[in-house]
Structure formats: structure tokens, C-alpha cells
Length: 198
Image 1 (tube, helix red, strand yellow):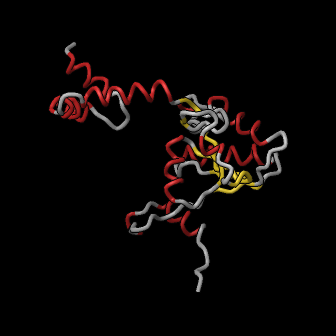
Image 2 (tube, one colour):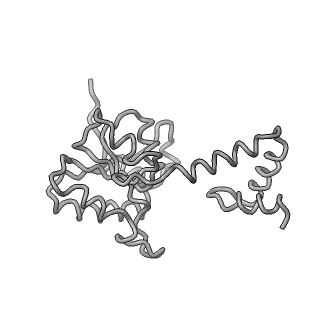
Image 3 (cartoon, helix red, strand yellow):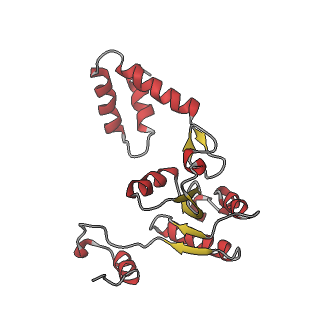
């Protein structure tokens, strides 16, 4: 296999990158000034060497525990449970949540062989025991069938711990058109409606 074919094959393994896009990326890199490919390779190597999972929340971090878990300004009484570490970045961009996080590492999917033991559910349970300050757990799993199943399962597990368990509101995005929304999204938006302030 040639070097070009090898790079194209490796890039095609990335999520959302098909063979055609991988080929375009390969030729884009070949056209870059000398050193650009080495810079990219070095950044990938540094990430592989330096970044690990936070032992507390499961977020990707160069330190352990991560900067969010060690930030004393954050509300330690609230933990937001997400499927993937990338979900933390999305929530942080909103600048509305100042609590802590817990990354499950996926969602329940029996058809794919992903049960409770394959996710970081036991780690969450242990984290909430032993004199934890946590008062509320926010379930922020994705609005998919698997995300809903995961949230329902977690609600059952956490209800026994005597904690307040909430679910993020799901509904229509800003700028979205009702005519293009699916039935479940509209139903969720109606169920999560709030009174308008004067």
C-alpha cells in the first residue's frame, strides 16, 4: 500500500469521514507548506501521550482530576450526566451550567451489546455515595431512543439514592420550523412548555 493510500485509509476510519472525504483531506495535506503535516502529526501524538480520562468524572483531560472537577467555584451539589465527553463542551458553551459532570462513555444499547456494565454507571453510583454533597443529578443524555432508555434506567438507579433526578428539557431548536419537526420533538416541546414572563 502506498503512503497516500495508507493515509487515506487511516483518515477514513474517523467518524463522519468517508473514503472520498479522506482522499480530499490527504491531497489537501500534500499541498500544504513543508512542516504542516509534521505539525498535525505532532499534535495527534501529543494528544495520545498526554490526554487521559479524569478518574472522577470521565472527561478527557491532561490532569487528573480534570480542571472542572478541581474548580472550587463550581456547584458541587449538582452533577450533569452526559453520554460522551464531547457533550461537556456543548453544555459549557451555553455558560448556563456551573455544576460538575459525569461521563457515561456511551448509552445503553442491548442490540449492540452495551449494557449497564459497559458504561460508567457504577462509578456514578460510587461517586454519589460516601458523604457526597450532590443534591441533584441532571440527566443530559441525547434525545434518541437509546438516550431515553439510558435516562429512564438511570432515573431508576438514582431514585433509590434519595436524590433529586431531573432531565434536560427537549424540544424545538431556535430557528427551527414546526412543519419540519418530528412528532416526538413536538410532543416533548409541548410537555416541557413554560409560562411566559411578563
